[in-house]
Image 1: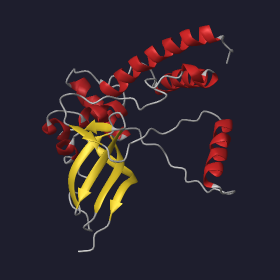
Image 2 (image 1 turned 120 degrees about the vertical axis):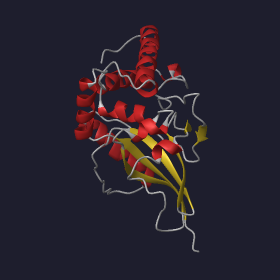
Image 3 (image 1 turned 45 degrees about the horizontal axis):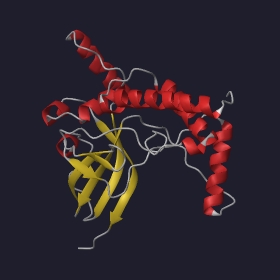
Length: 236
C-alpha cells in the first residue's frame, strides 16, 4: 500500500468512512447490498490499515471501532447482557501468524490447538431460555443493542421452545437460508415476476426482520447455534 502523508491519509480516511457507512447501511439495515462482501472487506481493510498508520486519526464512530448495523425503530430494543461482537477477518497467511502470536501471548501457552469451521453467512441472533423455556430472541443489532424478533424466531422449526434441562441460558446462532432453498425462493419470485433476492444472507436477514411473523413463517429459515453467551444451571 502506498504510504500517504497525514493530510492525504486524513482525506482518504474520511472518504472510506463515508463509503463503508453507506454500504454497511445498505447491507445491514436495508438488506439490499450494492457491492460484494469482498469489495466491502477491501475498503474496511484499507481503512483499518490507515488508522493503524495514523492512530491519532482513529474515531470512535468509525466502523473499525464498532459493529455495523442499527436497530429499526419499529422493533422493541433488547440490550445484550453479553455483547455480540464481530468476527475478525484475515486475508493472508501473515495475518494468521500474527493472530496466533497474539493468542499465545495473551494465554501464555506455547502450543495452541484450533478448531476450523465453515462460516455460515446469515443474521446473528441471541436466544434466551429461562427454566428451559424459550422466552426471547434478538438480532445482533449494533452488538450492544438488538431488535426483539422473538415471534419471528418461533417460526423457525429447528429452534426448540423447551430444552431437556431446566436451565437459564443465552446462546448465539446464525439464522440462514440454505443455498437450495434460496435458489427455490428466487425461482418462485421470477415466476411471480417479483424482485429476486441479491443473496441468501440478505434474504435471511430481511425475512427475520419482518414486522409480521406470518410473513417470516413462509420463508425457509434455519439456525446454527455456535456459542454459549451465558449459562446458569438449575437443579430442580
